[in-house]
Amino acid sequence: MPESTRTSSTARVASLPDVGNWCAVSLLGQGRWSQVYRARPREAAADAPADYAIKLAAPVIDEDIDTARRLLMREALLAQAVSHKHLTSVLSSRLNQSPYYLVMPYLEGSTLEQLLKRHGMIATPLALWIARQTAEAAAALHRHGWLHGDIKPSNLFIADEGHVILLDLGLARSFGDGQIGPWPLAGTLAYLPPEAYASIVDLQPASDVYALGVTLYRMLTGRLPFEVRQPAELAEAHLHDTPPDPRQFHPRLAVPVVQLVSAMLAKRPHRRPSMEALIRELNRLEILTFPRRNAA
Image (cartoon, rainbow, N blue to C red; front, side, top):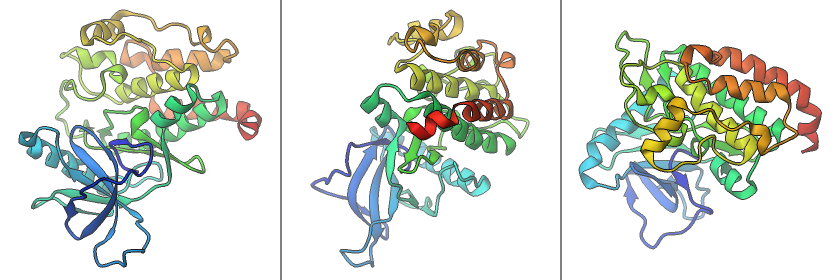
């Protein structure tokens, strides 16, 4: 399913909007900028499968509709430019007139955020598998000169068979056109890298590595590296504090896994592994834990 917080079920709503040539059958989720509906083509029979997801520009504040439309435009652009098995795909779009929306495949499964809320922690072999698939998606973006900019559990969709899709390309930023600039304070604060809070630091692929490191830390421990809630305190923690050793919350965690998480969460971007190096290390650790993954 595309980005936006997915509801616990495909909950029916009293009044579903008309979305172009699509018939919305249920609300899947909503966020600050959009709503996502399960849908079927309007000309299809009422009992035909609803195999599509419509991401509709529907900002919380009506005046933000232009921003919501630009986010959809960026997502459509990237989906066209970067095709990868672990990236969200866009089948078609309507962005030149209201209502603005994207059409995507409907996926069966859950977001990682839902799984974490349900289970607290993810078994190490499965966590490494999820992280490696996410890293492959991010590496594909990086090869085309783009940062994802908002890697977090609610933007990782886990299909029923374990296949991971990285969602929500609306906050992606280009770093390959010579127009590199400071990171805007956009995204989810708990997953933003230290350089997001320092206006003199430019965008770079290592920023996505940090966000994935926070995500992996949470999968392995059931908590965030920094549990403070106030934005100023969170910024201070990301800039200067060392996260608790993951083994405080998961004592049997293997040393190489702890070392990898620590490297991903390095304060200085150049000390983090590249996304390609991260994929190789995650692959190595996956092989070591593969029998345990099959048993999970």
